[in-house]
Each structure stands twice: as C-alpha cells, then as structure tokens.
Image (spheres, rainbow, N blue to C red):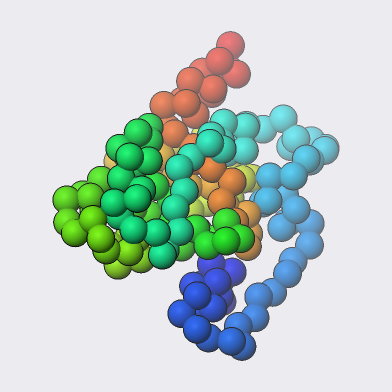
Length: 161
C-alpha cells in the first residue's frame, strides 16, 4: 500500500496500518542530494515551488477561501499534520456551503510524482495531460511543493542554453 493511502486510512480511524520503508531509491525520490553521472540531469526538485497553500481536512471552507483565491493556481493542498497529501481543494468548492469542512468537498488522492522525476519527462507528461502543474511528494507522500509546467519549460530552455 502507498504511504499516502496508509495515512488516509489512519485519518479514517484505522489503527493497524503499515508502510514499507526503502533505501537508496527512496533517498533520491525524496529529493535529497545526489552525486554521480546523472546528478546534473534536471529533475522536478530543481524547479519545485515550496510555498504552496495548505489546509487541513477539518478546516472550514470559509476559513481557507482567501488562501485558495490568492494561490497561483487557485488550489489549496489538503494535508494532515505530518504534511502528507490527502487531497486538493479547488476554487469551485468555495461556491457551496462555507461552513462545510474541507474533507467534505476536497478531491481526494490527487496525482503526485516524486522529486527525482526527470524534468523533461515531467513536462511531457503535463503537456499530454493538458495540465499546468504537478504535486511533488516524498515516497511517504509528504508534500514538497508544486512544479508548474511553465517554470519547468523555462528552466529546461535556460539549461539548453
């Protein structure tokens, strides 16, 4: 089971949830420093924006509406107290009852990728999916930030010289 799924089950009250912990590949996927022949390949971690709005599942929509509206892409990332990604809150959620809790209207389990994703491949993936951004998490599902396609394309163009 993925770490994010384990955290989600735990948030729903399950008590016996387990997560497998890996080695070197997890180190790289977490965006930690690497050395060697492939260290200079542009990766998601190189352009990740870490200052993204977050909210908790129990927050009220009315309490986070300003945060959502002020965000670069109008999205608030729903995380637990350990910064594990649980969902995404989009602007259309603000049109309803502002007294509802975030978990009632969030999109659960948004697509994420790891910090070590090769940037060129990630840009192509975003282009193919016709989306402008991707959440970047550690292997455990902890939010690192967001990669915006336009930032990644600019970075790759500058790197190509």
